[in-house]
Length: 251
Ligand SMILES: C[S@@+](CC[C@H](N)C(=O)[O-])C[C@H]1O[C@@H](n2cnc3c(N)ncnc32)[C@H](O)[C@@H]1O
Image (cartoon, rainbow, N blue to C red; front, side):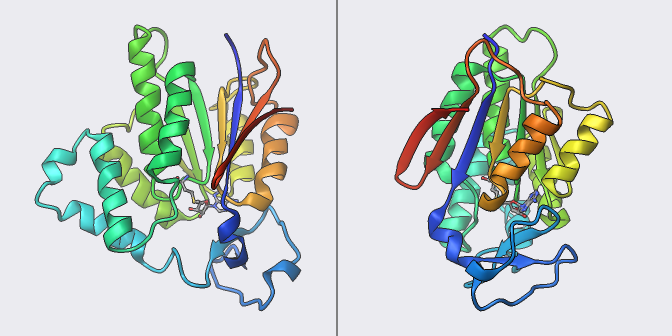
């Protein structure tokens, strides 16, 4: 069955901390985020109060993982890498990734639907890409490994986060499935289509996890402007997961 699945992960608890950061990565201060004239597709938003990311912890994570005496057990072991990231988040510095509970829910969707092409908006340091691409690859192998290998596009605005993600994706042995793309999601989507990397109606699952205020505009870019989402026999579906709440609706 052909289908397209769009996932939004919303974190209302984090909303008060969202401040706008210029595209040159200089922090702008604003006393009242609610009055910030946004959304703007040309800007990224970062959590700044208290600092929850982008304060060096992402590179510290990378150094931590590659200095572990157990590093060899992590090679080509996606679940062990994600567990190590969870351990780092619990014992060193919090990481703004999806976390194991929601990741397991989404991965079970991936296992049951075996999407060939997944696009993620907001890759951060690769946790969801590693977890979901691993599930995607397993589903493809379970289905007899027919056709092309699945493809997971992870779009990330911050080049440092993207670099960390690439190193960890490589460690996980998923380099032939995951492609990390640096840039704002809307621009990257347009470029991927322009360069023939992702064609019309080729995306089976769109995972929006970058900035809540950009979910609608970037969904419109992917769906209406570029026509990337696969049209299904059934209706388009949006699965909304949020802290403590879960619902499914149709577009
Ligand atoms: C919540 S994190 C993503 C977590 C990741 N999906 C995971 O679970 O491992 C949000 C990420 O979106 C990125 N981001 C913010 N605005 C963006 C944009 N316009 N385009 C692409 N990425 C963006 C941030 O740099 C941040 O790394």
